[in-house]
Length: 192
Image: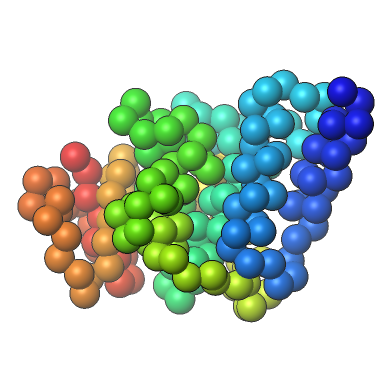
């Protein structure tokens, strides 16, 4: 058991230090291992514990592993957007965590339906392409935004409790059944 805890601690440490060239699959595997270890109650150090989320009425607790998943979502979904657009994507992810209709962890939300090609909310998770983090500055910014949104330092009123978004250039069928709540950068945001 102690050996597994040491491996988990090393994995969490590796995730927290990761700013290099890791593939999406490697990052996902690292984050999910740490996330599972946290949820199973392993003896992780206090700094690998929970971080409160207070934005837009969020009730969730976000682990360090979930912060990494949130940063990954920001990086792959919105790194070309202005900071507000990136924060809006993060807010949608956290809104889903707080909804009973979606998984109750950030990693669970981000990778929901990843096995169904092009049938998930976060396209990078199920498009079948191996993406690699090449832009260190964008990755660092995504991590900072993830931390700010998860800790309630940044919340966008126009996004509010939105649980869906899409790029302006696409017209998903589900959008007709939802209430449009805002447009930030190249993304349109909706609430059910």
